[in-house]
Image 1 (tube, rainbow, N blue to C red):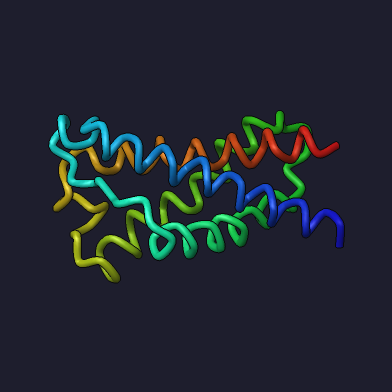
Image 2 (cartoon, one colour):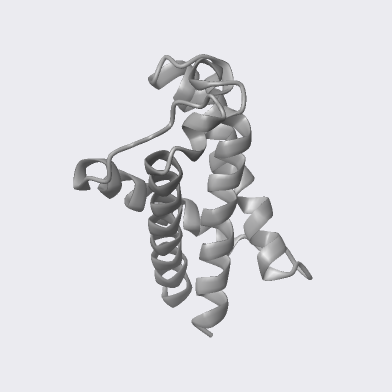
Length: 130
């Protein structure tokens, strides 16, 4: 039970880091400068579901990827939410086209990076919790 709780909490922390990076990139115009229309407002309505989903995705850290560096594991596991975002959420839920390409051609790279931030932050949180 302790491992489940730690993975969920670490995933939530990773989601906070991810969300702040997404918001920062949008607010400072980094995404816009590359032609990507991702610039969310930092609000509880936007943040809360991201934190919950981050915690749920954090449960993937329970998978036994033996002899894998925790940061490598974070990078690998971050591909799960990346794939779902690009091939389920953007095209089917948000109507932004396959891989969110309607938001800009570099959208997949930003999503990959943002989710990498989640994965590495989650991994680091788990490593520090030991």
